[in-house]
Length: 398
Picture 1 (cartoon, helix red, strand yellow):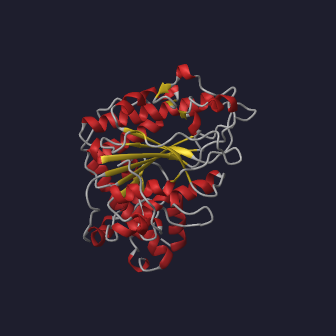
Picture 2 (tube, rainbow, N blue to C red; picture 1 turned 135 degrees about the horizontal axis):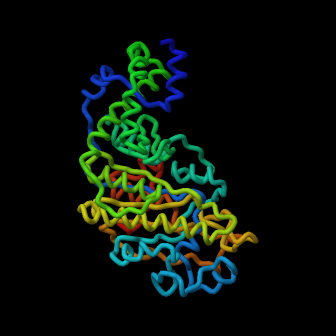
Picture 3 (cartoon, helix red, strand yellow; picture 1 turned 60 degrees about the vertical axis):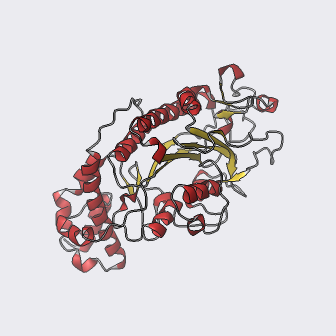
């Protein structure tokens, strides 16, 4: 097959494949595993979730003054303390919170916030400053720094069809796997065997060599993930939603003993400029019911203490509602942390101060990279300055 045909074919096939004869040189190399087997699960709420109608500061009159038609009545909230309560659609997390498996970190953001979904998500995924453009993600750099000899990308898995920037490093990257069986079958297509027969002379070429190596890694990983994950069948009571299915897949991976350290899932649709209450409520219900099923299954299998779940969104919303019964792009937001061993469960810090705003927006009190620094230092056992490019002080939730 001509190189031009090969490149065209691989593009159409979404970059998955390879031939067994290829695998020996790579699989025979030592697979240095990341130390320990603590799992980190990152949950991304895409679209800029409105944190003020998620953890509602019902004890502040200004909340009801700023949100005449979308404020949530006190009587409907799931009260967490005398000031804040959860959105009523998050009832599935009530027991999780009461068990001490959940921490709410308020007012998380970064200096000079960007209101663009794409740019702000890049900032969160790369852990950059707002005026800094990085091509590697913070998890990718963690792999670069701590898994230099790992030859397969399943050290970090995104349960999706595409890989987020967060999981892309300079020399290492994670792998996107939405359906292990589908990935495995795709990599075993006879067509790809033919494609790879002329690999030897291309492996040292800059671009083509990188593509071949990526395919080899994908082929090898698909076999390992499919074989290993078949050893566990979920027993959890998950709702029939796409988000819950992602978490069910992660649970299957964790409980089957997959040698993966970081998992990444997402739930989109939080860009609520109009008719926010119904749209956000539906999404928060999906989120909460999926999370509750996931955490309860991990508890039942003895994996909850070794799993940390971090939920974030790229920004919060403006404090005052707009004329369309929605909210526009804002700044600081809340972050949720879940685990069976939290050092400070409950509400971690003070509620957002709605009487002290920055041009109508919340002022951030905690840099999101302090949250990452805490996870890197205390959960992944790596100095955060090696990954975040400068030292950040950590927090005390784990």
